[in-house]
Image (cartoon, rainbow, N blue to C red; front, top):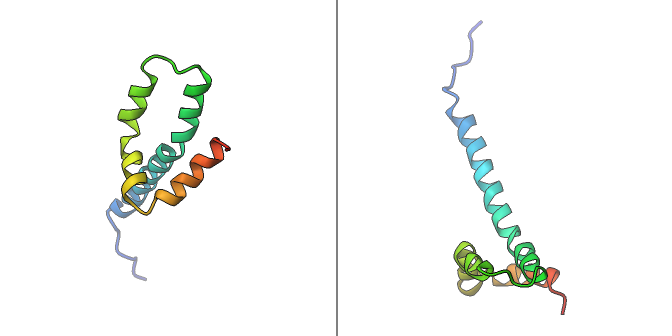
Length: 82
């Protein structure tokens, strides 16, 4: 009875690393509006706006320059009802 060839385990580690990267990217995108909402609720703390401009500038770019405009706009609408 032959054993199947052993793999080095890199494929499993790569999948786990990819899953963590995707989770972090999703958490980053989903944290955008709650963070702004909390900043406004706290009375616009000093330095709060600058931190958001730097940290969330990739999302602002994606909103303005990619087809992600509609889903991001929808998500913003959930937090700030008109």
